[in-house]
Length: 254
Image (cartoon, rainbow, N blue to C red; front, side):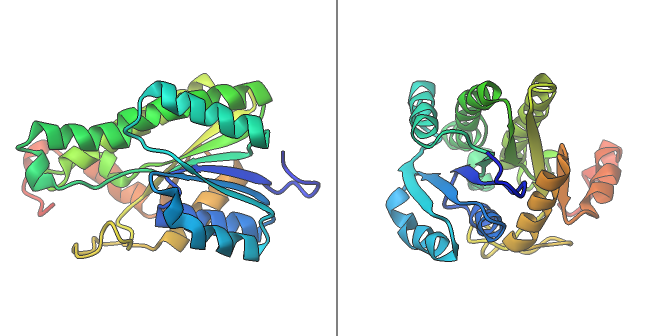
């Protein structure tokens, strides 16, 4: 539940190793969040991050195993276990994902399937039980880390982009389905973010940082927004690209 001052008190992160997720959690703890559960494929790698959050003021920090590649039953058990032990969560931050290798994935069905499964199917089967638990508690926000790459997938990363497009559409629909329940869904659409995942890639225009995406996310949470862009100017850039005729779009160096 929110604390006496109305600040978010508890957060569950699916994809706790994400630099964007950790930046967001740090910002939430700075605003008095006290319960943090970081769920990641290798929870043992998050011990330093967990200790940092405790030092910053979080009183209950736990790391647990979450793999988007697991089946729906495993995801449901994880969600029930975490909610049963910690009670209500104000925020579930969905941040797991992989970029993949486009050159391989567009020619190798197994590689393409792995990207889509991690970024879309595996997250859907974890989000659904979270939504049910939050529906039962009657409050909270599911914040889903999407990307502008899902707005109109480009030839340079269409496997990744299409997987995120599916997740984005699912999150939007889930938000509509939860209207009136007290549960909100926030879709976060950053552009190019300087992280380990993008290291070595040429930065796109309007590139940003995990901390800036975290700021946009917290602003969206505070406003009860349905969508935020990071940086905000991408909303207008993508509006142009989304409606650009395909023959013109294909000639862009993207």
